[in-house]
Amino acid sequence: MKKNIVIVGLGLIGGSLAKAFQKYSECSVVGIDRDKSVLKAALEIGAIDKIGTDDDIRSADVLYLCLYPQADIDFVTAHLSLIRPGCLVTDTCGIKSAICSKLPQIAAENGFSFVGGHPMAGKEQNGFSASDADLFLGASYLIVPCGAPAQAVDLLKAIAVELGFGGTVVTTPEHHDSMIAFTSQLPHVLACAYVMSPRCPEHNGYSAGSYRDVSRVANINETLWTELFIDNKTHLTEELDTLIGHITEIKDAVARSDAETLRSLLRQGRLVKERLGE
Amino acid sequence: MKKNIVIVGLGLIGGSLAKAFQKYSECSVVGIDRDKSVLKAALEIGAIDKIGTDDDIRSADVLYLCLYPQADIDFVTAHLSLIRPGCLVTDTCGIKSAICSKLPQIAAENGFSFVGGHPMAGKEQNGFSASDADLFLGASYLIVPCGAPAQAVDLLKAIAVELGFGGTVVTTPEHHDSMIAFTSQLPHVLACAYVMSPRCPEHNGYSAGSYRDVSRVANINETLWTELFIDNKTHLTEELDTLIGHITEIKDAVARSDAETLRSLLRQGRLVKERLGE
Image (cartoon, rainbow over all chains, first blue to last red; front, side, top):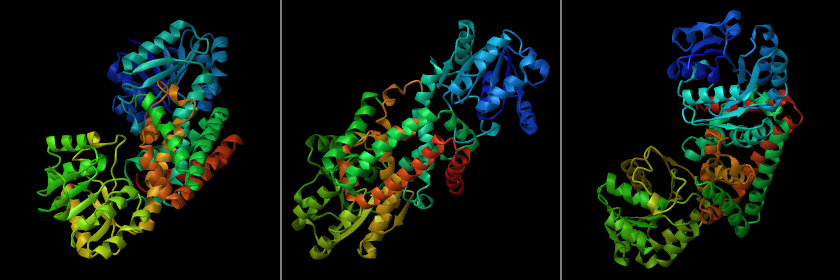
């Protein structure tokens, strides 16, 4: 397809989207970023066709918000007069309730569409320099319509297929945020908490894959994730309470040398994985 | 080198050692296992040269114990009369204090050497069918001499180089067990506790690398790990208390919407990883 794509924020996700559009579609790609050196680099390597102006926003078919949650909302509010009726505005944030409680209403009042989006892909590096046209290959793309017309949702799905996503899942903000608290936010909390152990700096020589896997995402962008965690406070604290409860059960069984209980708890873990066929 | 190697227990580790000796050394490899079908399979694919007899134990230069911790001790006790003076007995257990409080003394009383060993490699599958000649390539090999002669330690180091290990680290049972509680046991507890969330069975479509990495080792051998955890009770419960404390700090900051504290906690995690250059 040929569409005018505007990407706001050329970090890891926005930069990867730009590169994927260039590699896998015939769309034109315009980039907006507060960092001029990023825009220059993106232009030089052909990740974007041009640096965005007000006119580019006016002629956008799809506008991707790839900033932090509140900054996405602020960008739309600040550029309302430029977003034409019929434009599809979408985001790429890791939480949806905070976004979807604001942008669908603003969109409805101003004659454009808003559909929430969340590409389930990432890296332990940040920024445009880490972006990759193939970041999304095979990944799941979560779509949160928030009452938008089916046509807008279908366009996002079609784009996802073109960019190489493995599939799309349509869900509600509430369900999205409860699942993401478990699948994504919890591992990030765990990674940070794990590497705070006084043993961590001495791990070299004593560690292998288990250490590497749990600690991987501790290399976190703390400003972004602080906002994501607090925006998803209810679900995340519920998951953390559940997790602390299960760790404590295992710990208590170890402390009591209660082999039978411990074996039964570990068996539960194994059975979950086996039933999932993983 | 050409040595008579006897491997007791052809599971993931014992089977991989057998295959590595065949692939990378000129040693003869004899296998002992209570499961006759495993012995037959190992013989058929050439992982062992023959199925072990009492005579093979008598002529062993190095005897690798690749059973569970208590079973390793029981095997030595039951076969004391067959182990010749000069034989080097070693193990591959994930804990060392429980082993090293028994076997060095038994060895000294009976004229052979015992050196504790722990190849830092594994897989989320178990058993001979998952074993792999290349499992140890680049991995760290932990050696716990427990007072054995330098000659015995040097032999184990030389074998480790020949089999493709990335390096050897010589340490004490106490230090070994405190480090392993953090680098290996904690991730296994975490993986099991993590997948116990009611959200886990629905993760598909909502998950990516973070989920996969934290949950990977939940596919656990609960009988083996129950023994390993309880044998390392003091260090493991200390690590678990530390971890629960750090998770709780993060959770409390989220619950209070205390962005400053949360950012500072996550930043600690990032800095640990950055300082380690990972």
